[in-house]
Image 1 (cartoon, one colour):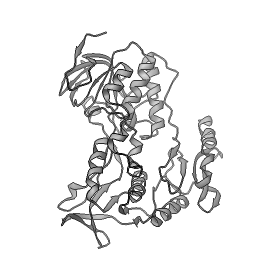
Image 2 (cartoon, rainbow, N blue to C red):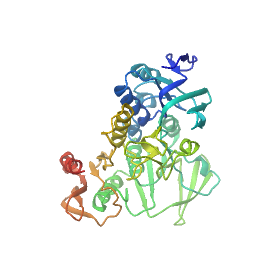
Image 3 (cartoon, rainbow, N blue to C red):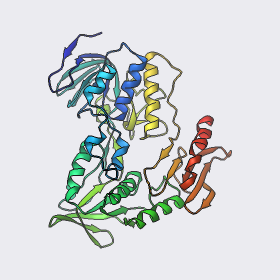
Image 4 (cartoon, rainbow, N blue to C red):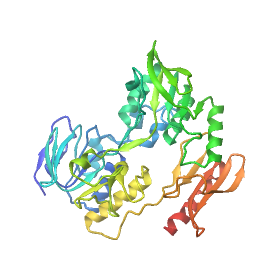
Length: 401
């Protein structure tokens, strides 16, 4: 193994090698998950993880329900980078930005020194998007995609009564429920005509919308914000309908975009995300990609279950096991909407409403399935008391994959 050089006092107290057998860039769920998997398969490997943030380990899905649970940013913290790196016996370089990468010399140039690798794993995640809106203070729109942004958000809303959320997808809907449960007045701007379009069948989406409206959420279907201007201690939003809304905070929840800047520095093949094969290798066989920044043949799968399988695939491949592959299977999704229990598995490649077939429709209890032309189950959506059927249905899908 390469000689290890001491890190400085601002970093975890262990040593960080300047030449890693396996280097991981990124400390989100994907980064730490693959670090665990690689350490399990390669107990003697020199592993280094480099991250631009503090490397704190926390459950990212909890961000959209932390307010309702009255959990601070500190409450969400599970491990510090030092604690996790000690547990895994790996080197971690926090608060370190990657400036350049030499593909030829397998060299990573950072703000805190240069490091070499044999194999590189990119786990840079994705950034939250903001809509292109005119107005003098549109830049003050906030996003909520990590622990630091949640910490700032939590402090900001202490003096805010009304919040406008732009985006009626999964995160926007979960945030609306979380914030209204925390006592805030909420306007939810949904460009489409239903919640979670392309994800929820219309019947379940309608029930969920009715539940949120009954809780006091003001849902504006088919409407968008054109301008965001400053008002006295608030913001003035001009809608495309000509109406104006005064609000204390504007939260963007319109989706994420994979972080592919590092991949471009390495001249890797990129589409929406970094393109990977069945072993999670990029167009450079010595470089892997995982998580929200990675794109397989089925697209980007920004959910925990695919990330865990990607981590196991990478670790096995690094050990020389070619039998473990990452095959895209629609993940089992449980929404964090306490007003209506929902579990679903979306059919890969299907993005329309026409393929859903209703099998049960009793009040808020819905069971819809999606079958292919050979009548094979490819997806399902359950709500209410019927969510208890999810595991059995999902097993049918995965067993047939």
